[in-house]
Image (cartoon, rainbow, N blue to C red):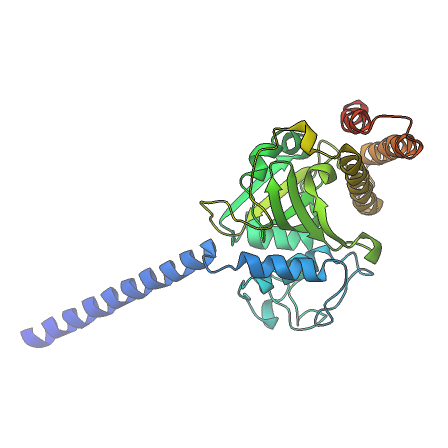
Length: 311
């Protein structure tokens, strides 16, 4: 009888140890996936650049159903090797992320919706290595710091003061602390854009909007994509006419993306910001084209004029 009892105890202990072992293994697998160590930044970057200004026919284009921006960044992540999560039976749950065809349940709500995407990859399921939020004002003031901690293949979003995300972009290149480039889809083909300048794009968002950064995986060194990170310490290196043109284009694009969102959001202060900044940009563009002002002075005027807008 004693031997039978001992054998039962040994069997129970063995089962418990096996379960603990399997839990430990599973935890390590989950942890490895959360860090996304196998995420291929170069593949994600190449995809973003290839399809920034057009639509991959494999995927449906949602420009007439609220915009295509999050659909695009989901495609970028998938191209970089991010695994699908969930199944058709839980397509509307934020734990899922997948795409097989146009409509739910053949795709998840997190694939196309900016807010569900945010909950899946950021706030709730935290599938990325690091998640950060800044007000637009703080992001502009801390841009050098941000530029040193963001990489090609990372994702950024923008949210309103009520913390509801509404727009998504993919980072494609970092040249130096002033040149961080993104690619995006938006609410119209005209606003599909390749290699936009993030620093200038931020200027077209009100101060109390937010910039959300998703670092997909950990990086300890700078990545040599189309140049290296370097400090720009010689003013003569800067073509101010080109910089001014780029800034104007980016602010126009950003204002248009903000305007489109505000049609649903309908915030009066955002509307005032859009109207006032649009007038300033148009005036500076006229001065630039008439050559009545120095390009550097006009660029400084454009950037500094934002501080006088009703924010």
